[in-house]
Length: 409
Ligand SMILES: [Zn+2]
Image 1: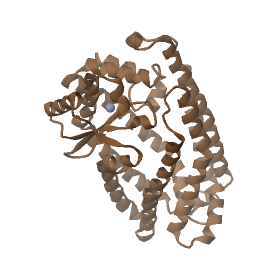
Image 2: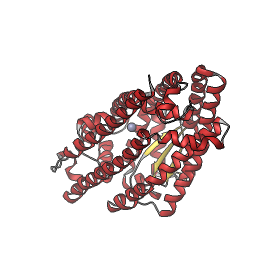
Image 3: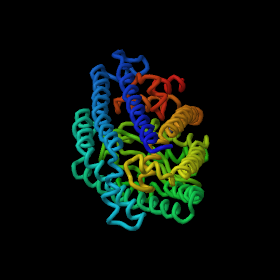
Image 4: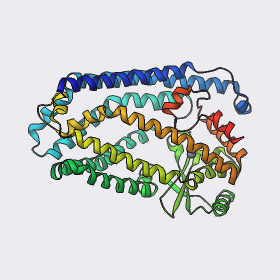
């Protein structure tokens, strides 16, 4: 394909995907309803429900603005050869290709982050604040950013360096070796997320002895769940929203409960939420999603290996010669329709898994307690009770509340 054709395809994909996303957001906003469903009537007072509608309206309007801004900038960068221009400025300073690529992506990441900081700020300190969710202080906001930069530079930088090194030394077969490396890396992150990465951002304290801990241990024993430890995480440091999850592959499972979750739920409800999480493990969702993601990694890398050496991709982005970092950007956009389809399949699988985990919690523990917990979580996070089905199909990894409640009955 000629560079001009490639650029036209890249621009076409960017424009269509932007318009499509905005249309979905708009349809979803229009699907809002003023009436309160009978299932949650006792949990919502009328003002609070109105507040949840306002919250979604504010969030959607805000996302229209941020999306338009990002779209305008990336479209201009693509149409006017901005990426090639940046490459031509940096190239004379770096004879080493790996170093050049690291600086190239570093500049793009930092520039795009600086441009979007006002939006992130507004989202956290104005919108989330207005609805009582924000607990982040300015200090946490800034240190989170700095830690994110350091972590991104280390992990992203290391992976990118290895990728370029392999393309240079092995050639088109690099995808097999990099795939193996990425698979091991993903496994490593899965295993050590709670012990290595999470403590960088949050404080984890072992759950103190008491009724809750005993109930969790009793349940784990009953269903043969290899529980290693239960931690309480200071989620309240950033947001009033609540969550729970467990991590670890193999025999040692760590359960993490947000302090915000413990605060608002009874022991019965908390164990029901855990029973749901255990359901994901028992129904083999964790191992399957790992295997599928490994398969995806190899698939992406294989397609990448067919494109990464093509000089015309670099020229399409305004470059003067073949550069792997330019080709990676072009590939990212050209591949996005395919990755859109795979993520669609993954979300629909994930929604199916959520129903299964709910059913597991009902079978082994208490469906009613889980229903109450889900209602409370939904009310407290002001989540959308009537999302548009098309929006759910494309964006939801969890089924909407009313569907889950109906299935639990
Ligand atoms: Zn789940």
